[in-house]
Length: 337
Image 1 (cartoon, one colour):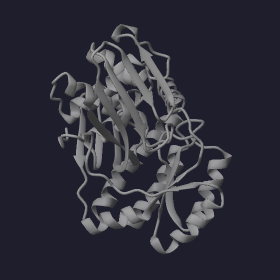
Image 2 (cartoon, rainbow, N blue to C red):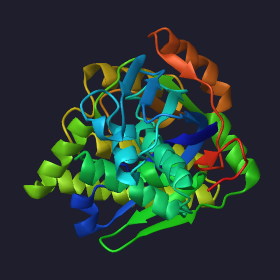
Image 3 (cartoon, rainbow, N blue to C red):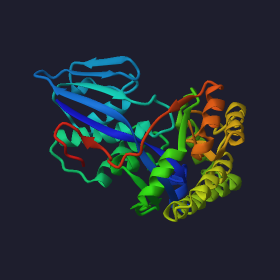
Image 4 (tube, rainbow, N blue to C red):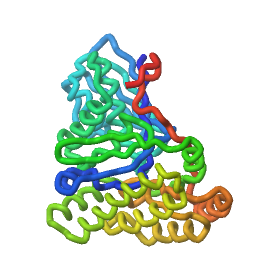
């Protein structure tokens, strides 16, 4: 058996500027950190050519006679696309499970694809770098599955840790953000995640953004430039240990992000955000493209009791987490790629 896992991430700033329609023209930048919530794959070879995949998250099963029988549209598009891309002709059983629900805004699709790329590259004896894993995962989703995604989730899951990632037409730069360990512990304690119990298709929102960029929608482009510039300020605040400034920058980022596309927020999400700000949060944002998933808030410890009580009264689920330094990993032989 081979067991692999890839972490999901929380994005602090710059989300949405990692889509090619934007960064190829204006450049993109994001700040994100991986957390200790993972997507897992459990692989077992078979002696015949049959392929069987079981998803714990969707409670579904796909069984085919051989590699050539794999098709898209049956609920296993990402693993099927990676398997086809790497030409795994032999039979196997694959069980997958995630610690967070799909459509959560924590980059789960990127983690799934990165995890599958890492597994398949090992089976093909291809030693890929973290960058190659991220790029392969992005290519499979964008070019094979035609998903209107950006690159940050793939790079976050492949590299792990706290990073400032810049995107341009020619390159992607991954710069680890170095901050004082005590500041990092304080940041970890003061970040709170709450599940809105609304999942969404990020592709719908991202497609609207891409269409707006193609149409030269100035208001959307200006909002995305604001979000990009905010990512640089967030990086500076973290490096300087200015966590109150960081919290307020999250609020600024959210106000800019809401202007990027319809569907990012709605009356319910705006009301939840207002309740959080009235109960101690300095700032926050939806963790992913928008429309649902997890809300992330920055709130100092002495005010967290009020915030938790207020949001739990709204039936939001609190998610306890810690930061994670490792990216995609093969667990049962201890090698991290």
